[in-house]
Every structure is written in structure tokens, then in C-alpha cells.
Length: 127
Image (cartoon, rainbow, N blue to C red; front, side):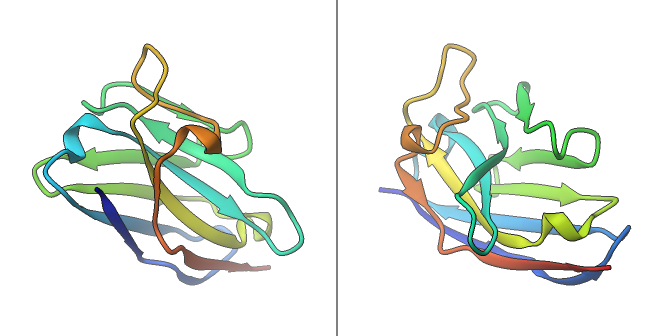
């Protein structure tokens, strides 16, 4: 069983930066593909970024490509999401998740592929 706890959310002005962290418990952390999703009010949850077990392969939604960076530190059982050049449309609750059902490259982009989810952290970008 993996438990995930996000932190680092908050209020930032447009153009600013935030770094989200997600700390995981469990000895099998390294075997999971990890991802970040977000859900804005009145909208469906959407994929943001994913990373494979070794951190060598990353995948991003088009809306965040070039602005967000996902990374992981397996020694610390932690995954990060560095968010730069933020926009008001980035406002959402952000969730980290762990997948044991990844593709052959070791990551997953669909919510149903994820087995474990954090409780979420609010990110608000003011214009």
C-alpha cells in the first residue's frame, strides 16, 4: 500500500512559480510510475504530467509543456512538480498519484491507470 501526501500549494501571481511536493510511504515507491493531475471547479480531472520509475522518461499535457517539470527522488520517496510561468487557468486542486499499471515506457497518463492518490493541494493563480 502506498500513501501519498501533497504539499506546496498556495496563492501565486500570474507569471510566478510554485513547487509541489508529494511524499510517499511504502517500500515499493520505486516500482511505481508517478503522475500529477488537477481538477478545476466545474471541470473534470485532467492529466498534467507523468514520470517513469527511474525518472528518465517524462510526459506532459500540452497545456503545461515547457512550463512545468516533473521529477522524483527515489531516495526520499518524493515526487515534485515545478510550475513556472503560471497562468490563471492553472488554478485547480492538484493531486499526485502512483501507478502500478503503466505503459511499456513506465508511465501512465490516464486516471484509471493509477492505484493510489493523494488528498490534493489547492493552487490558485491570480491575474
